[in-house]
Each structure stands twice: as C-alpha cells, then as structure tokens.
Image (cartoon, rainbow, N blue to C red):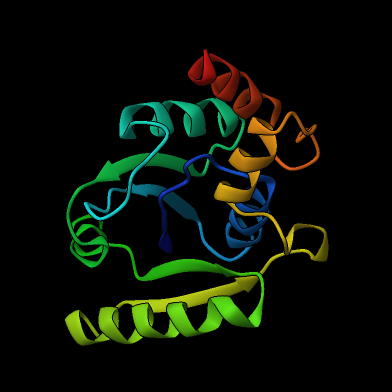
Length: 158
C-alpha cells in the first residue's frame, strides 16, 4: 500500500487544500492529512478543532485519515510507513519555501519523497490567511472553503 502524508497547518482547510488532497488520492492508496503544529505560528483554531473540521469534511473519503503532530513530519512518516510527503504549489512564490522544506526533509530521511501537485487555477490565490481575512471583512467565502469551515469561523468569531 502506498501511503502519503499531506502535512500542513490547515487553519482552516480550504478548497485549494482539498484540490491537492483529491489529486494525491489518485496516486496514493491512502493519504494521511497531518495537522502539523508549528510553535512559531499563532493559530485561529486549536489542533483538535482543525482535526475535527478536516475529519468532518473528508468523512466520505475512505482512503483519508486525519491526525496531528507536534513533532517532525518526517518522523511521523517513518512511524506509519509513509513513503511520500504531499505538498501543493499555487505560485512560483510557494516553490522557494517548498524547496527549502524538501531539502531539509531529504537531509533528515532521504527515503521519503516529496511529491508536489499544482492546484487548479481557480484555487491559486486561496490561502488560509486570505480566507480568514475575507471572512472578517464580511466577504462571502463560500466558493473558497467547504461550508463546514464557514460554520467553524462563525462560531470562532462570536
């Protein structure tokens, strides 16, 4: 079984993230969406909320599991026997950061491959921070995120 990990903060998950996940499911038998916690980031949603949100949204995707980690993604990949880390690219600006992460991960464990998917053109401008900013300004974000995310954002903003 080919297992991949799709790591990210997913704060919150967007249609762009889901696009990458669906593309990865065409290549891998199982994809673990791994909510990674970076101590240097301030999150809107807790790791428990992000896992819950993603599980709700992916409940009809039988080959998807959702977990979280405070450790290194590569260590988690080794632990579950994953052979690849999935990452999404929206624009050239993403590539520099992703290249740095890929080379760092390869330094830690050269047996785990990085696999990059380009997001659909409709999703190239979507980021979690953009979604949150638009929502806070009262802009309709229903074309950018699953409806469940909007409900989570409404509850969080109260």
